[in-house]
Image 1 (cartoon, one colour):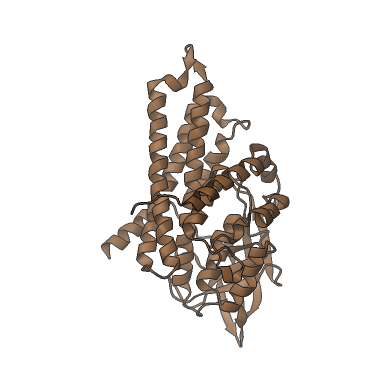
Image 2 (spheres, helix red, strand yellow; image 1 turned 180 degrees about the vertical axis):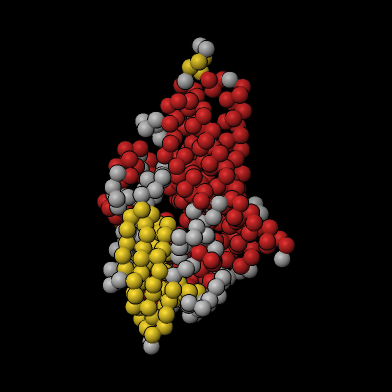
Length: 385
């Protein structure tokens, strides 16, 4: 596959870079980190109203721009580069994708329209306390009662779960296991019986929450897709999200490389900048190589995702591309962030420098949706089948 940006995609990249350099500075990131909410509402409204980014790949019939997944990934790379603190990933890359893939026409019209208007934030809740990321992670229980359903269970690692207004929730019937018996629901966060708690984590730039459902009653109109058979749709959403987070990781890898090169040009040792030392040059070259290979994997996966959303590919093709991108980008970003700390010397660990923020994001994003070993195992399984 020969890939090059269109003029429109170059404009999206350059516009995103300029805007994020303004609104997601080091000071802005640190201010957002100090709040439980985790983002500045005014900046989020500027993103929605001025930039209209939240609508970039939502179909035009629901008020979106109707662009492709590559266009979304172009923007996500810049968001990862500037460590944007916002509910964008949870709303767009998790909830919006879930609505596009599994929502009914009525749910799409209601919720996607509100997301495009900038009046709704949303997220996906499917993981439990068992630390898994596949179908076994779904431990919430749903019970049918007449025309309604009752949900019970505890969900962990829910991005922006304490602030999102809409929750896309996966739950299984009590007698099921594995990929069987899973259903998806669209639930307002203020529904009686829903308790949300912010969970402090290592990565302060992206907030997570625990959500407890205690006999939460929902109607059949809130069911997304087919009852007890939602795993194929949920799996596709997770694969799309893995590509999205890999795109952020590429942006972070590039930024820690840029910060390191800039620092080593200024740091003088033995009478000359350390950037001139051969060992430092080799390490920086390795960082650049990892970043470029990761970028290639991400944009290939984004092209595959674009085809998958249009119904032109088998599920295995999307799964393979997503896992290749997520596994390589996870390891590459964390290694680059670790090398950046080393090349910054003692100051790399200090609060005044931003390298430690990227190091923490690298680790949290490596683990979120499955680490490199998890995704390599998935690729190996696909190759053996």
